[in-house]
Image 1 (cartoon, one colour):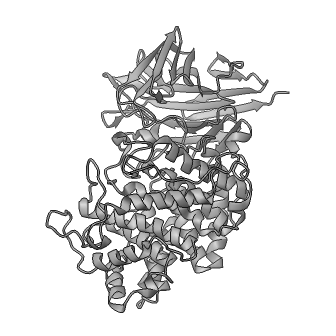
Image 2 (tube, helix red, strand yellow):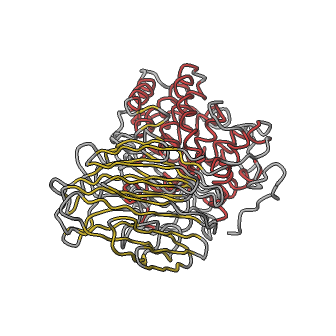
Image 3 (tube, rainbow, N blue to C red):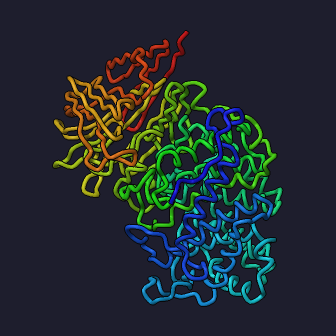
Length: 639
């Protein structure tokens, strides 16, 4: 398929991205045209090519192809006031009628039935897709639903109705029955009140996960990721907006505004969202909460900044090669990268990215489309921002636009057990320019080596965040078990592009090896150097990851990562090693990730009697005292 036909850039209106509403419309049209070529009979199932199906099977995957692209079509047509020159809604209406005619329990497509949708009672993934269909029907009601005959409406109601049952998954999934119920109630099909009960039940459930400051945890005790924006904030607020419920808007609007204050800082100057958490194949769905704030008027961002961040994210992926030769979004970050993909994802899963087009609901004369672009937070000045609820420290540098997320609070561990570390959650740091390695030496990780195995963090206990710092503690785990009596207390100090990482190991056997990984730099090429207590990786001649021991570490080296990262096939990571002593052992190093090429002063690190003092080049002094499971930090500002 030829590349998407984009209109000329407008650097007057959009000095940072060059993109306007017309570019969003062109990309939406291109995506829909590409997937349309894979639609089956009567447009009921859209079976996209892929290396493997999801765990839900190929029929569910094909429903996903229909549902998620229908949401994109709905946003496109609703945003145009019902104008539909491509006939999108006619095709999706045909598929709606055909798919619900004789829904089936059959999970595969081998029986020759290339039309019927899976029953929600038989394939729970169908509930997720039912929510997208319900939202799409709600957005396009005057042009699609209201024109269906009574028989088809009843078919659709009967297919959706089982989706009103309590969620089978205890996380953001509770909002899927809520979206189904909201549509049925609005359409006058909530005859027994089950639809409204599903709405109330879903909103009540997520209330227990709201921690304040605009942050939810996604069901598990400490699960923070992009689902905060593209699910836990988006669905309740979109429902409140579409229903005109001022009470709900008064609850969820200020929460989103609070969330956006920190969330906006997680986008790099190149448009990249921070690479952290699951379902990253959804890519520019990261723009959805930005648009939701503008749509409802609950945002701290100016219209120009909102569009700059959202357009930056879309262009980052389009320019970066996220569309394959067929014009499709594969499972990966740019191209295919199976290592980062979850088992629930199939070939059509990336089209959750459709949510990123929410801004098309805003009319063309809205300030979000007419105001000149303004810079995002990462472009205006160096900043280090503490987000206490998720236990994150957001560090950005204006010279290169990189955003770094230091993680001292998100582990995605269930309450009743401790699972193996997920690199997308358990790393000490994530960024807009790097991704974690899934094989080889662990990047951005500190662990003990036990019987040749590097320990994992397991459950993370936040110890606090403050001005330029964040800290946590964990009991290192190997072989599925926590090391008896061992605690690692970790602290990150950050300023400019520099970091200081300190780890106090208590209770470990004397002579135990420890390893500290730095940033895994990746690209088409990766050069490495190591000398004494320092190691560095230079990717594509620009992105540089450095790691240097300051206390406790004794060796430095660089290691190649055979599987690369989501950012490129050639990758390497600097690694420091050391040994514990008879008492609690303190290990301190400096780290840096940058591509600005700037050479500034380095932080001066001194360790005396277990206290870490950092003198930063600007005169700021941070002093930290680490004890097992406790950290105290004081800051003295420079002149």
